[in-house]
Length: 414
Length: 115
Image 1 (cartoon, rainbow over the protein chains, first blue to last red):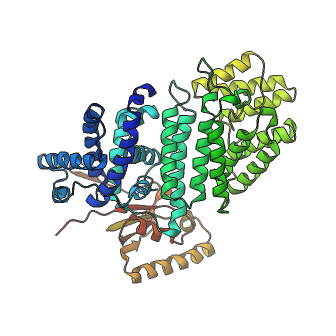
Image 2 (cartoon, rainbow over the protein chains, first blue to last red):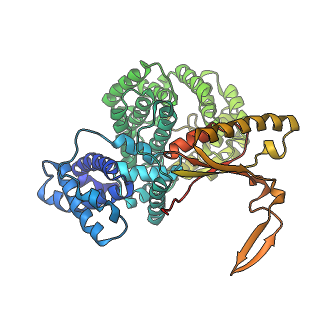
């Protein structure tokens, strides 16, 4: 339920900023992610009790650190688990360290490639974004226990395998940064279009991803792909208010009320893309952001510059020749050269995408346009069968019932 | 920090052509020589073929011998090494330079007890 987070919006911002920074510094000072994270989460529980009542203290980070230190000492005296860390915790000053921002190290550690993707995601949301285990479980529609286990296991692996706490050296930075970007992108995608659960789109999770991407951009302002990801996320968020109708049904890009789009956000974000492009190191996130920008700049669906979109997808296919990219390129081709050329391209990826609902939906659209209704109907039925998201499924079923297969259905918003 | 490298035999060794195998083996041998002299590889051996393995199964204290290796032929172990390096990143960076054309390498930290 996104509603119950709202009264705490301001608190949350302070929390997230201060608690995140403190967790990261404590990992450095104590040499233990597990301990640092537990100390801060206990301090946060206490803050949640006091701050709404007494107001946010002027020096919030020092308040959190003092509380974390006191709680930590109490616990370490009682429990054997971290006893050897007792002198380190006792030696903590109550003045929160302000000079260094250790969060970049924390992000790279949480997204280390020795951890499975789900573990990277859970740990990053927990330690960097400060979501509770319960919130993460709700976000990904998995049992809370599963998330808790994932996090415990990941933290243990970091210690046992001796994953270093540092920003990767220059030659390793790019591949490691890709891991981080993927984690953020997946979090955003799950909010953008949930694969499970009742809510088809979740603004809170998408906003968490935006916050994380923005933090990364502050910490690594020279990396064009980070800027690209920030831009991609922000452009999609700018269109958010137009994505659901009054009854909570998903609205296709084609039919969206463009007056509801956040024009200012779009203009500002396009400047981010330009800043990235000036570095002359193109990459998939920058290209995807540019494609989103072309859509955002079109005053109406009919005004969409499909030639430019096709060119961008061709560029993307040159970097990442995945079947999904080829499918998207085929959709753009539909508007430039027509359904026949597009269908030819779509059939070329049939083998790899036979279990992907949007592949069948695209095929259905194109077959319909080419006057092959029986095949179109079969493809559409297959698409519905494979759709996990309830809103998307309803939308497709509706189209099928109307006997109306729309162009652009295959890729609702890109 | 010590890490054990558990290395599968790989297709190139088990089923590759004679000339391919010899060519790869030459590179592999050279790599191991370099690793040992760097001081980072502190132990390790190539093993005889999996068909030579005997597996001892212990159940409630009773032992039975099996005329086969622990693992499926596909992941049969061909050798092992022990690295002594600063952290997992250094261990993985070294594994990255291994020259064999295929196979798997399990990297596992070793528990070191004070004696």
